[in-house]
Length: 324
Image (cartoon, rainbow, N blue to C red; front, side, top):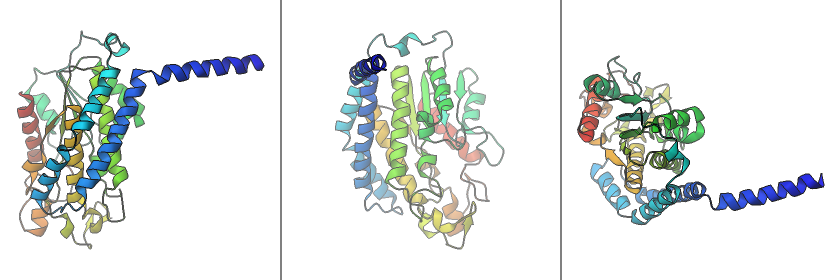
């Protein structure tokens, strides 16, 4: 028993020394700390933002982005420390089967995420650009935290694709971390915890890509506002997806907050951001219910996913940004 104890103590000390100096461990801890600090800045900027004022949302984004230089420098240093020449991730790459595009996402990118039965935006990309080698890993209902490792099978699928040196990785995530009807307080407002999950999940996924496949271009994308900045006017008597209308009144504010997260994470990590928010504005349910308009990008009966016309807008935005 004594010999075992001494051996265990020695092994533990060796592990502590090794782990303390391990670049990957140090990088993971610093990236997490960057995420925590970004969350603080985000909440400060969001304080007092009027979800009915598109100009205020733009001002909040400019204010937040102006605060991020220090966080970006810390993030870059962490990535550099974890990307020393000769690390295992470099040696494991498979250059024989390259990818042009890998898509990591939720139901918005899942081929099944079109309520009118038409093509989704990734399927349009595959159909219109058959010369491109595209892998769509998106699975409906998944969160950024799921892809960051909470669901190991998802992280394993991404890791396998990263061995193929993809030219571009689209990370279209965050909606299910923040925009859910049960999240946050009783009125559906996304809270610091849910926003923090989106930040940490996106940072972890992007960091994994940057370390495993540093030449890959990473592209994020903003989400649309289902209610066109009018969600605060949803009647309490209205039932949506089996939930009272009050649960949806914070949707416009939540979308602004989530998109601020996406822009900030993009600025810190060097990822591009495709803006779908602007092109969907005034094409959602806010007009048909509150202004007697129509919903050209959604089906008449409420659904959180775009119809074929809406998916075509997303496809065109990505196509133009990627230069396809």
